[in-house]
Amino acid sequence: MIKKIIEDQQKICQKYSAEFSPVEMDSLIGISDNTNGVYMPINGLRHPQEGNTSGWYIWSGELLSKEDNFFKPKHTKHLIDRCPQILKFLALPPGYRFLVGENGYIDVWYDSSLLSA
Image 1 (cartoon, rainbow, N blue to C red):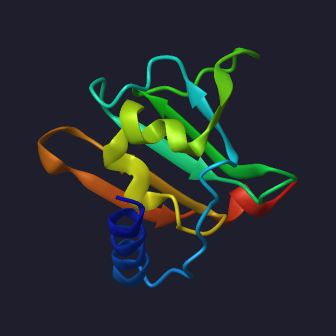
Image 2: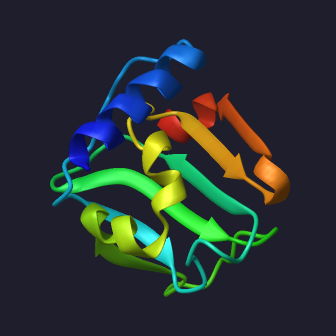
């Protein structure tokens, strides 16, 4: 399964001309409670890595909440069961964002503001 995930990640990075920057499955992501692979859209953005964090923040819905406890730390490997359709995006490097919507809609773009402190 991990081999297939890596192959899919490499394809996404090639498609968007992005450097392949995989995360360890034991690294931490910030994820909202409502992100379960069903509630759409699913959003992700990647800040630079720090310590054992991947830099990824993932949430479902149209709006990004400003609540302090909106994002919960989880190990990346938990996405295999919780939200497997986004694993293929997690090798995009810091500065990238993605949105997965209904009916196969996908958008990936670079946002340089994610690299600023």
